[in-house]
Length: 178
Length: 198
Image (cartoon, rainbow over all chains, first blue to last red):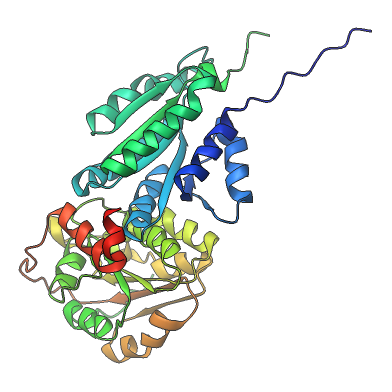
């Protein structure tokens, strides 16, 4: 009998969680994305963190401005389609020079099957750059942890918004041709 | 839907009454008239928004979670609250215990030419808050009623939501403080001391 070995679960979500612990993230704001499933679960399970599910991503931008006002570090998790929902609120982040760490799992790029994901996915980096967010795009699972750490350092030490775009090549994509 | 009698309460009187009993409460205002109202009673524990419409309540959430021992009060307008109505669902679901939201509801977008908001056509923001799971909610339209709400706003377990119907009085822009970096840093330094600059 042929035994197929189940592929090992990717470690990058837990690499991110470990970075969160290292840099003292206490508030997590998120709109769920399949790519962030493991990370969201880990944050909910951590009593030192408060993970807040949002109705729309811009709520998280405002919430994390509030967290900084109160002395907490936070992070916003979302899918690339949510970036478009945040633009005006990101203007507040820029004008007040709030730090913002956001981790964006990408759709609408590498191997995408859903054409409706392309307009936002292909514009994500451009619109973030336009509104003054520093963008790091990571396409190698082994580099996700250190990229998030570097982004967190920059965000909290320079009081600037920094995004890490986690490529669809890392997250994986559905093969709908079958 | 029957149109309720128009309130005669002046927004500045309502805000002054509320902030007169603030103690060590941390205040977040929405943009526009709410910002100007609170600006006449400036305090280092005030964070004013001059933009980011729809975000005031959620700034209150992040602040309340970071400072669980302090009361956080959000004062905003009906137009601003309508733009962030989803945040009422988030706050109700999260049951933020130290958060109170006050909407100064003139039923108008007063910054942009006094166009009516949905609250002028029967949309009940306190009803939305109640249905979203807020612990205590209400709508009032007189100063006497506002006064009876003080212990609730500052002491009762939240989230608390109060909609205060006011008249259409507008005031000249009275607050000069509008540099966002300064507003943020002043607030953090007053609250966190030297840790604000770690």
